[in-house]
Length: 329
Image (cartoon, rainbow, N blue to C red; front, side):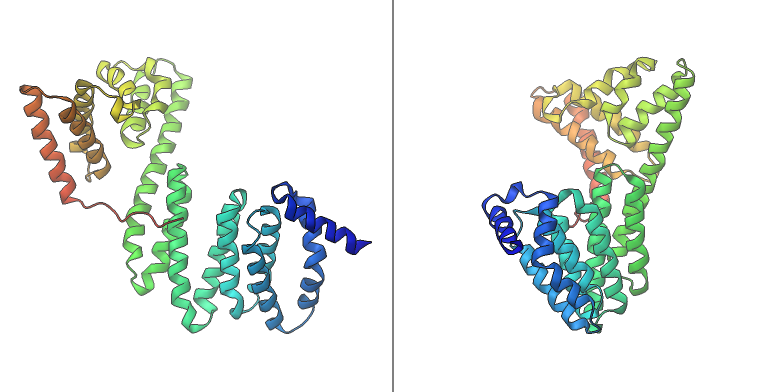
């Protein structure tokens, strides 16, 4: 009867893979792989652990339509593979597959991926240590970039800091890039916390116009998040800031020529004052000025001014080459 039950479950999984729930997946896994996992776990021979880990990973790669079952296979492959140096690569590949396939387990899987790659880079086979270190650095850089995109700047700084630390002994080039990105993440983390403190002050005193204006400036200029500034814009007394902040929320292609020029001049003022030079501000300044030039066909003072300012922005950007693009996820 149990055999028939297992067959029915497996056939149901094949017929309707996306309907497989977590409980069903656990039953299928326990029935098909449970005895073998228990058997190899009870021996002192790590070779059978590594072999089963490889088999589980191969099966998981054909189970992408059943993410709950795939997750169980990958977790088991990781658990078995990480027990011996021969299985470190299999364990790492299992967590990579899990991170790529099951979104709600992505973060946990990549944490485990970082753990096994760290272990492999230090105690793995000699010929696998450097490749594992490079793979670890790529993983940490990808995590850092994703945390930046999610505005989790403290977590991003932590990931980049690990790259700096790991790259330093061998003077690997990834360290220099990670250092710059770590500094940027730390700066943005400080700004985010500063905004939070100012918002508390504004809640305590609705007439604290200086705090309101600083919140707007930090959101628009430092965080490039003009939409977040709108909530306190009614507390701002600076008329230019009140006029331009809503325009900064618009997509570039929605701006009229004069709006783009006004925004370009505004940001250019902050870019000139930034110490050290803020490349991102110059990128945004150039984009607004270019939008004006594209939209404006009339000669005159504004056209000449925009051309001069655009040349200035281009020169600033040429003097500070962009950082390398983030690694693929």
